[in-house]
Length: 125
Image (cartoon, rainbow, N blue to C red; front, top):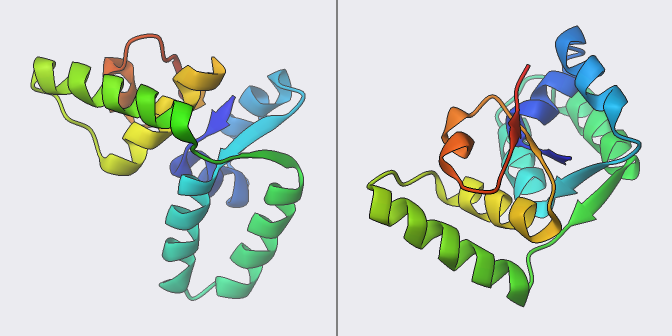
């Protein structure tokens, strides 16, 4: 499963509802897009040090996913599909959805717009 930014926030804030979801997978995947989004959020936080430490630990426990040429093909396809539906989603989430489709992984997220993406399963909590 792929962790979205709000899943990372739930994990680092010790939300007990996400623990049962994570227990199902032996290893979770963390896109570099999410790392960038979360690090951006940390910069505006008063809790920078503990959040950075928590993120570093989460990174060490995750498989890091980076977009490549194949991801770009999935990205273009998903973006086109959503444009045809008249239902665009945020740019970062397009890349996360492309990685999910490419690697046949579910996305752990509270963002319901992932439900619009064919062949991508969202797991909420």
